[in-house]
Image 1 (cartoon, rainbow, N blue to C red):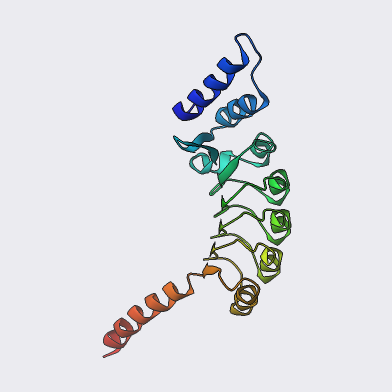
Image 2 (cartoon, rainbow, N blue to C red):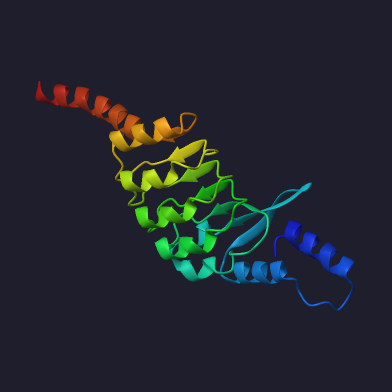
Length: 196
């Protein structure tokens, strides 16, 4: 168990008295860590939690999210590069304390984004390399605290991005399209030189 989290739970258990059974949160942390996830407090003086599965890759699926559901004070959740699907996202529906959510390179589609509607504290969302389309962006329009959204290598269009930008004018959206343009500009002079 992570040293910060271990210390936190040790203090909680000590305060409850010796010989007490593990709290529901301690049990959930143990299940998360058994599944290959990492749980840590945000800072020494901040007991809010970060849960990270991204290093486990495809071996982490929807079943791993059952252990997260109901875990209190989770503000950062990293599910990037896992096998999480739309069905799994239903498990995080009630995690209203989330401020950062990584879903990049997962199997998430538009349907799964409906589960994010109640996550009103969400400030950062990474959907890079997913099957998200403009329809999925419509599901995000009510997330008024959202400040950063990554959409590179998704199926969204300029029209969908523009519509979301109107609904959330303070939102910074990174589509990656500007990177494609830079690459294209670099390749064009090379092609002209080769033709000469």
